[in-house]
Length: 363
Ligand code: G6P
Image (cartoon, rainbow, N blue to C red; front, top):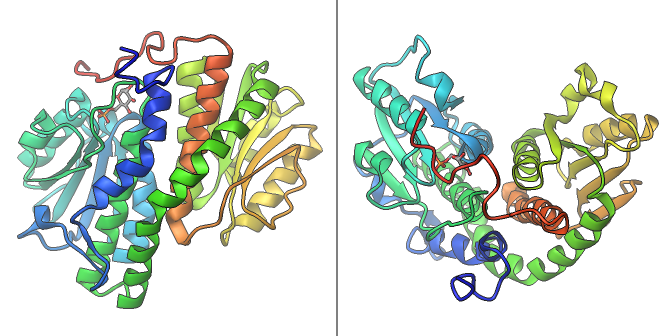
């Protein structure tokens, strides 16, 4: 077992550190740097959808929420992102013009499979975005894109989400280029930038781990955490909170920063700290003012941010600035590492959290 963990204490930390390779493997053969194009032969015969419904559970659902932003912005495709257990029982409005994108690491999640079956009955076509080759989702989908992340052993999903984000990024570039809604110049920029990511992330991970350890020691005594983000960072806030609660059993809520004033702000006090996603983007000034509201209530803040941004918070966690939406690929491992180090510091069974299963094949 220890050999399987590659010298790491847990599978989770091993898998977090595999993410640079996961990105590279997902890109392999799918991007052409010379021509600045994306190749997804898996989608041959399928034109860009009129309407897209992303159906998934758990961490895969969070990946879908992130992908929605890119698909709408670059490919101008209307996208809904649905929790599979809700989608499968709704009075759905679907026909031949609808495409389902089912995201599932295991490819065996019962609710996601049921969602696929209902959608197919109604004439929609299905693209599976899966990690496990030959899984049920893969077999029942009309088209399959494999994320190629390799086996994920830790119950708390890490590298699978990284691979899903990579695939969604490529999908948005692909359909954007196909429809002409994304200029060749931006497509090329996007391809060149994602190509640089594995090397950059690999170089950053050791420092990220050190910072996460420091912060874990400082904050592991609290009983609740708030995670805040806007736009592309909102799904990351949800994922950061999910990781923390899954493995450390500390209560955590992920919220859209702007929505905090409609309820959770009532909870803020010194011992209810906030983990803010405050990387540079157009919405950062808004995030900053949300954080001032937290500080006005004596709430402590960890802010994941970029060089040169003075967030004026208790604990700034500075990570490199990268092109456009790619900041997710640096923020995600920080969120995972923080949850991991808190759980490990508290002596929890990181790879086998109580009450959770790696793949949920029952309803
Ligand atoms: C379980 C796992 C989660 C995972 C979710 C969806 O709850 O513990 O880590 O995100 O199922 O799994 P899937 O295999 O469909 O992505």
